[in-house]
Image 1 (cartoon, protein in one colour):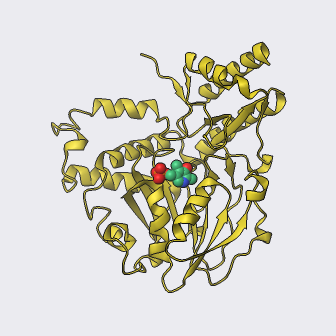
Image 2 (image 1 turned 90 degrees about the vertical axis):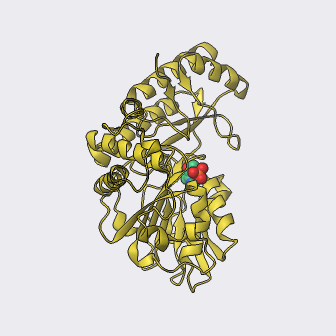
Length: 360
Ligand SMILES: *Cc1c(COP(=O)(O)O)cnc(C)c1O
């Protein structure tokens, strides 16, 4: 059996060693005679798994004790509502930056709970760039400032952390969490759906500054109340135990790779290789302002759209999977998350070279 290179944007490829370990532990987790999936979430064994995962994540991302780490459910999309319900408080409005499809979804959902001020947008450019922060129309009395550090569909990534002053900064890091070093102390809330860089879908990791807890609107569903989830160590109800365990294995793997610093160096090298190739080859193009090109998601088009199907077919035959771009953008997209080995990028470039030579 051979593993393919899976360039899917999400659910995405996981480290092979993590999958092997999960396989080896599937029927009998460390002599307990059962799978992690079958364990009580209140058991000593699972509590240890859960606590170790949190500890490792704190170490990897540099999360201080000023922050709570929550393992919630419903993916990143449920956070689009959870954020305003918990953070709007007495203020009725929040600032949002619109840089693409995920920003827009967050804005649409928040608009159901309060007033949203779109303080900046790159929609006029077709979401190919990020407006300079000096042009943003942010307000000092906003409940929070929300942005999307990496637009997974457009392939657009901030190369800076916005300065939000005293206003809590909220970030949807679903597709670039743990991909490079980060100063968590600049954020009020960081959230990330797990299925890109962390583990299986459904799980969403939330890192929240503790002073932001306890402000939820009174009609907030209990399961969406950060304070309740924090007070119960993310076990107010049955958590997504198996996903939590797998996330823990990924955190251990990341530590063994040298943590986020080493990951950032590898991710930059992988991205530069692919963008460098695309720029040097007339047959391929990427529309994003080079300064803001995503390290994680690389969309590209062929010179002739009529060749897309043939390109994908040839890629599949070589075990280069899921390169089809999002339906809203078209073309191709290669996602290069932490678990995509550099050899996968090399194999993709070799195929693209050959395809352009034969069909270009
Ligand atoms: C994938 C993604 C989401 C949605 O995640 P779900 O877990 O499917 O809800 C939200 N934001 C970003 C930036 C994403 O990449």
